Image 1 (cartoon, rainbow, N blue to C red):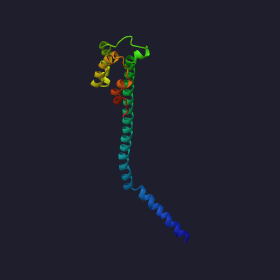
Image 2: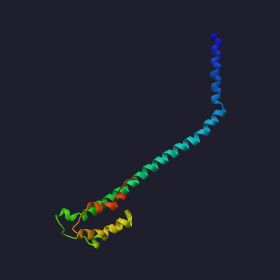
Image 3: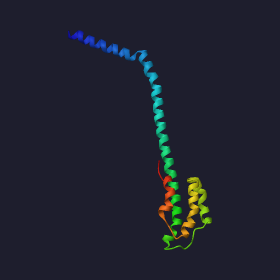
Length: 140
């Protein structure tokens, strides 16, 4: 009885191995290999794109924030000096216009040209200054 059971089990395993190694299974597995590799490649490409997109956003944010700090430094100079010493002129603002146009757009350029008038009012208002920049200073 044990011998016949062992032979049946052995026969089952041999049939299973023959089935697994048969040409049909090899064809199925080899045909699944190409789409699997393609899916892995698509996943890697999507992760690389996501990483580069996040880096692009971070770099743009860094450039915008650097510009913002430089212009704030010019605008808030009267506070740091204890009073208005030198008014900012439109000619001074022209130094920043090209960069503002490129990094932000027309809205910030128009805002920059309001700075000399605001400063002449003896008013250095952080909220007024920073409001137009807020929508550009987000990492979305």
